[in-house]
Structure formats: structure tokens, C-alpha cells
Amino acid sequence: MSTANPPSQFLRSYLRGAGQVFFMENAITGLFFLAAIFWAGYVEGQPSTAWGGAVGLLVATLTALMIDSDDTAIGQGLFGFNGVLVGVAVPTFLADHPLMWLYLVIGAAASTVVLEAFNNVVTKLWGVAASTGPFVLTTWILMLAAYSFSTVPIAGMGPPRLPVPNLDQAPLVLGGMDILLVLLKNISQVFLLDNPVSGILIVIGIFFEDWKAGIAAILGSIVALVFAWLFGASHHAIVNGLYGFSPVLTAIACGVIFLKPGWKTAFFALLATIFTVIIQGALDTLLAPVGIPTFTAPYVLAMWLFTLPKKELAPHPHAPRPDTKLNADS
Image (cartoon, one colour):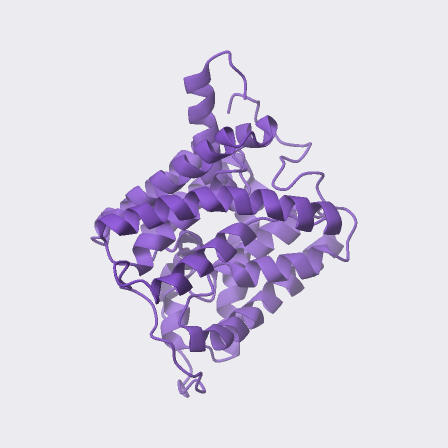
């Protein structure tokens, strides 16, 4: 990182870390995302998720500095986005307890190390982005371990159960406002937020940096809703955005970020987005017996599968594209 103004540089990296959850290297975008997290946390009566996200983002970024990670990547916020997701997830699924916060800090710090490991294997050998893979792996470990620890009580997941067929036989009927709320929750649930206002703040933040990514996010949300409804997914999961957040990320990643934009790429991204809905259902079934959420694993798997066959990848995970209109001070 530049030493010209260390506090300012760190703050910019910190905020960019939040923005990078949606591939946006922009501090203002990150501020919108943090506002979305805090809005949902306090409105839903769970402020620990908001502060957990802020702490996770801080710890992950500081860990990158302490272990001498790449300065350019730190400045771009690439070591913060997994940490903020870990920070939101831990208080969402574990009870608010002093040891939960220690657990969160350890997990956020570990996510930075796991990202370095992913970069050295997944990115260097396969040529695909680690993306939120470190968040998924780290948080899966934290959640599974919680079943073994009596002083880290589980509050919002499980219990483990055998999968059963979906019994929602009647088609889901949604009015116009219901559809809008689902589309917004599809986006907010990337941060594990069940709040449409948070979805609006996130959409604004994305459009502030990249209108193409904003369009992709909205289209991805629409596609996810249509195909989850068409395939008869759980009504509860659909209306709470649980079938939409991974497809939203897939649509942005495959349609705008990692592949060269164009009509063929648009078709490719559409197929990837639809397949992510199917992967979501498959992983819901696979993980039910162990009682942990999928998190963004459906997106990560789909993104890897659909970017591995293509060679027109961005040179660096989450790197800004050459046609970005924002300067380095954004």
C-alpha cells in the first residue's frame, strides 16, 4: 500500500473490500454496501450481523497487511470481501456470545490465508478466480465445528436432517409488489440480508461503479426467480431470496467481469445463471444432512465450471476492466 497517507489509503482499501463482494473496486460502492448491512442489521433487530461484517472486513484486511500479502491486491480491496461475508455469516447462524466474536475474528483472519492458498492453486493452476470460495470454505468449517463446541451455540441453522422431496405442490402466486420484493432480496441475500431496502442500496452501489454490472445483477435476479418458480422450488426459499443470490453473482461474473462482453457471452452467462439455480437445489439437498447453509457455493461452482472452458479471463480476480470510467481516487 502507498505510504503517502496511510490512514486514507487503508480506509479506501477497507471500503473497497466491501465493494469487491460484487466485484466493484470502489470505496463509495463499498460504503453503500456497508450501509445496506447496517440497515438490515438494525431494522431486523440483529445489529451483531452489521458489526460482525464491519469487524470481519477490518480483521481480514489487517491480516493481509500483517502477512505481507500483495500490496496492489490489498489496495484493491481483494483481501476484504471474504472477511466481511464471514463477519456477517457468523452472527447470523451462531448465538451472540463473547466467544462468538472470538470465533468470528479467527474466521475472518483465516479467510485471508485461505484466499492466499486459493490464489496459489485455483487461480495460478486453473486460471479462475478464487472469488468467494475462501468465504464458503472457511465458514463451512466454522459452522460444522460449532456443532462440536458447547460455548459457541448455534442459533440460526440446522438441525441436520435427511433430505425430503419438496411438497409445495401448488404453484407459487406472486403479485407485482411481491415480485419486486423477491428481486431485491435475491440481491441483498448475497450479504445474507433478508431486506429489500438493503437490496436497493446494493443496486445503487453497483450502478455507481458499473452500469453493466448493475443490469447483470437485475437480470440475474429475474432469471433466478423465473427458473426457481418454473422448477417448483420451495416457496419459502424463493420469497426470501434464497434461490437468487448465487445466480445474481454468476450473472455479473460470467456476463461482465471474467469474460469479454458480447452476445455470445450473454448467452453463456444466461446458461450459467440458470444452471446456478439447479446447483442451488442440488447443494441444498447435499448439505441438509450436515445442517449447514450453502452460502455462495452454487455461484463459486458455476463460475468455475463456466469460466474454465474460456480463455478470455480478466488478468486478475476482480480486477477493474480497462474501460472503467472511475479514477484511482474513487
